[in-house]
Structures are given as structure tokens and as C-alpha cells.
Amino acid sequence: MTKEESAKRIEEIDRQIAGLFEERLEASAAADRNLTRSEIALKCRRYERQFLGGLSAGFHDVDNYERVLFSTLFNLSHSYKNTQYGKLTALADRIHEAMATSPKEFPKSATVACQGIEGAYSQIAADKIFDNCNIMYSRTFDGVFQSVESGLCRYGVLPIENSSYGSVTQVYDLMRDHKFYIVRDYKLQISHRLLAKSGTKLEDIREVFSHNQAIGQCSRFLKEHSDIKVTIVENTAIAARSVADSPRNDVAAISSPDCQLLYGLEAVRSDIQNTDNNYTRFICITKDLEIYPGASKTSIMLALGHTPGSLADTLAKFSSLGLNLTKIESRPVSGSDFEFMFYMDFEASVSNDDVVTLLCQLDAEPTAFSYLGTYI
Image (tube, rainbow, N blue to C red; front, top):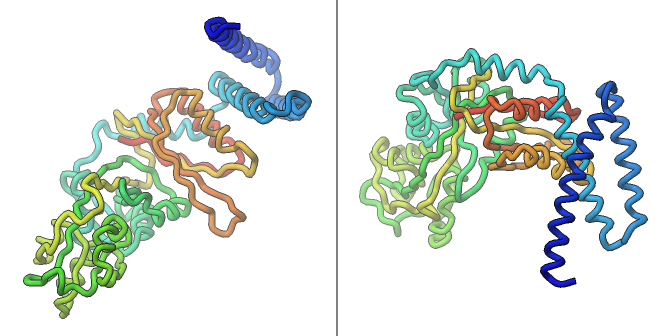
């Protein structure tokens, strides 16, 4: 067979597979007619286990490939049926109610919880998100969640990831312990400066204070000056204030231009971050679900069963709807035996009924699942 004939034959086979897959979906729907949800699940589980077990009788070299192929086919078939005939859960009602009752515009002013003190990057992000906000500061990220949950603040602003140093793991770990929804996110360009008292030179500095994220984002500069002791504090603004209030003249802070002005410090070095393309993404959270017009980003968190291919099966559900996953973050569940919670961001609007059906499908599964909101 020539190359041209082989290529033509491959195209013929692919078209046959596509036709057979459509035929299988129709046959599966017919076979499930008049059966209960549990009867369908048990029937499919028995058949699929028996079929996959029988694949070992084929060519050994392709057994695993066939198993993956048919596992994916079965999973796509389930996703299709759930999209077409899936039962909606109470989550769908909450989503539709939020879409109907949320204001037409995101509020311009509010009481907002932030971690740190005046000059913190969270405060800067909050001022970007709102035209006018009354900020209540908390010493910890957990305090921000608690302020929102208790109703003390309508919103909270939290850093969640940095483009050069990765995720803010403390925030991700706290997500499991609190009830909240994301209503907005904002990417803030971060420019770090080495701040000290007036007249201090680089060679005078013996210790530098900052938050661990800022320290990581400036790791190259600190490596070049390894004789300087690094001390981690709760926040870059706290670092700047500590330097301003210290009786010592050999200390500095890695902090922001805002803090330089606020605390009367001088920039010994500017733009000391590893890259100029340095952004931190902040999320704005609230207690009750709010979905504003134009919201097109959705976040969820879920646990997956201890079975081979469970993550691939879940991802196939998104792929089948053409949804673009923009982030997957996994964090170990403390006290469990190698169990992980997955956080997923994807581009989707809940005005799409198929997306709501998918969320309800995930919500109905026995593993832990939380819908974190659809936001602008």
C-alpha cells in the first residue's frame, strides 16, 4: 500500500469511527430508555468492567492503548447523556437565582477585608477593584475569610497566584475550611523595591524583611547578595513599617513604591523582582453567591476517587464541551492518605445550560465538590 493509499485509508477509518461513535450514542440512549438512574449506572458499570477486562485477549502491545481509548469513549458517552438528560441539582437553582438577583453592575464601593496593613498589595488591589472602599485589615488570610463569612465585611481580597513564583498555597489550603464565592479577580503588576532609611547604602544592609512570596519573586537579587540575612514577616507593608520604626540603620524591606512613600523610606534598589513580567492575581470573595452580567470565568474545587484515570475522566467532561481549563492546582488534604483536592479555573459562563448541567453532574458525585463562583 502506497503512502497516499495509507493516508486515504486512515481518513476512511476515522470517518467510520466517527459514524460508529454517533451510532453508539444513539444505541446507548435507546438502551437506557425507561430505566432509573441507578439501573443505568449499574448496567453501564457491569458492561464496561467486563468489556475492559476482555481486552487483554488482544494484541499485548496495544492492550493499554485500547483500554485508554475505550475508557475515554465510555466517559464521553456518560458526559453526553448527562448533558442531554442529566438531572439538575439544587446548585442549578442557586445559580439561576444569583443571576436573576445580582445587581446589573459590580458595586463601586464596599467594606472590604484585606490581610496586612496600609500599603499592602492586597489593599492596592482592592483600590483597583473598587472606586471607593472602606478597608478592614486582618493579620492573617484566615481572618479575611472569617470577616466575610461573619458578615463583618461584604467582600474580601486575597492573593492567589503569582506569575513568577506560583500559587499562594496558604490561601488555597484555607479554601477548604470556609464557605465563600468568588465574584471578581484582578491581576496587579508587582514592582518590588529594596527600601531603607534615608542615607542607607546597599553595602550597609545586613538584614532584609519581607513576605515569603516577595522573597521568592526577588530570589536572584538575594542570591547575588547572600551575605544579607532574610527574615520573613506577614506582609510586605509590615516589612516596610518595621524598617521605618526600627532603631537600626542596617535593615531594609522588600516592598512596594506605595510603601516607600507611605513610610518615608528610600529605594536603595528598584525593580529587584526576577522579571518585569511579574503579576499577582487577586480574587474578590463574598459570602453569598453573586453573578454579574458578563461573568465568564468559573472556579471549582473537587476531590477525585483513588482510581486510575480519575483525573483524565474528569478532564474529558470539560473537553467534551469545548471548555478551556486555565488552571489546575492540587493540594494534599491534611490527615488523609495521599488524598488531594483539585482547584480548577475554566472559561465558561453559567448562562450556558450545558455548563450548569456539568456543574450539577460534578455536584451529584459522591466525592467532595464546591462551586466557587462565576465571575468577571
